[in-house]
Length: 257
Image (cartoon, rainbow, N blue to C red; front, side, top):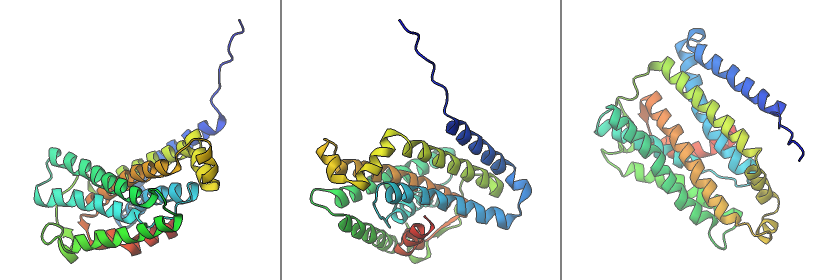
């Protein structure tokens, strides 16, 4: 029997690993290079970049123009801030805040995905739903009273005891992981499937695939990623406000992408 040839690691994998390692080194030593203002700006920018990655997968690869990632981001941020404000910031409660920052946006994402990509939906219908959801979430925040801080938001709570350098490193590592996973995913067979749905959804259905279900699953998973970004933002900034859930912020994310 012929001896099977060993598969070598493609050069692009080595390049991706080298780039990720180089960026990780910059993130780790960054607090020694930058002043506090720069660290603060870059920390928020890296959190927003995580959101831009999710919009890129939905819009750039799958063809779903969405403004709803702000709602998932804000939901995750508020879920975290409400736990930290009203219950405390013990290790167990921080773990609860992180869990809720993922679970609540995931449930909302599943519901939005079902509304957007159910039977008989159109791309325009999905975009309209993504415009409406941030408005609805913002109104819920306004009507939340002391629980959400209404129009003033929530401020002054304790979060992860990391300090600005620690938050810079944490958000940087999270962005690196998000980007690497997104790159690997979009270049895999599953990623090619997203492009196929974007280019010819009808043919994918003829081949026995279920584009609508795949869109719902993708929306749900990326809502969870947006929720993690919201958790990071709520802890790093120490304040969440209705603007973090709104339509304007959702539009800004699309522009950044």
